[in-house]
Amino acid sequence: MIRLAAPHRAARDVEVAVVPMINIVFLLLLYFLIAGHLTITEGPEIELPLGGGPGQPEPAATAIMVDDTGALWLGAHEVTASELRQRLLDLSQGSPTAAVLIRADGRAQADALQIVLEACQAAGVGEIRLATIESR
Amino acid sequence: MSLQLAVPSLTRRRISLTPLIDVVFILLVFFMLETTFLTEAEIAVAAESQGGAPGAQQPLQVELLDTDWVWLNGKRIAYPQWLAALDALPTEPDPAVQLRTAKHIPVQRLVAVIDALNARDITRISIGRSRGFAP
Image (cartoon, rainbow over all chains, first blue to last red):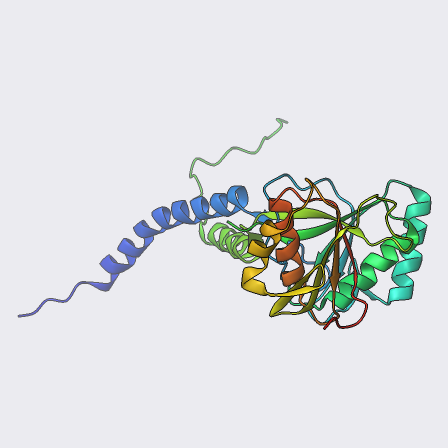
């Protein structure tokens, strides 16, 4: 005669297996918390170009984003070239040593980057940096 | 009349693990989706000045008018060979470079060229628009 396992026995086994699962989930959570860092979710999705040497990125500057279609973004808002120029002018008048970080998508056309560079120069921005993903 | 205090019940209640697991799973999913392991770097660049640099020497001209070619001082060189051609050029240490691009060149190519120049300790790079298509 074949005896099947009683159902109440199986239920108890599942309950026992929960504790190691919680342990592993906690470890995974800690790993993601410590090893990684959060992505910037504001503004468009940008795939930065590969390049740039090792070296600490410098502290926060005004970030101008250029998405893959060449549209310009300041924070979460899309701006036109003339709006960007005005904003940069306000920025450089507030602090003459203002730095600008351009987060341009690697697939964007250089024309959009030139528009940003020209706006920076017209506004007299002292320092311009281009964000990249460090290639290994 | 005596004051009656609540007597702590002796039967210990088991804390339910299910809500805890739910919250931890949600946190895990959030961090898995929002975390990046890529390290960002930055390249310092400069826009080409309108009046031209007051430097004594003629700057080295690097033009990107097409993705297959690089124009080095006006001479057309296939992209894979351009670094060899750059190394063969007789230049003074740390020359000024005028990097000019056509409109349609991808930013990735521009960064690759700047990166290659930086790797050769050429850091005085100004970026501008190309003036028409060179032959």
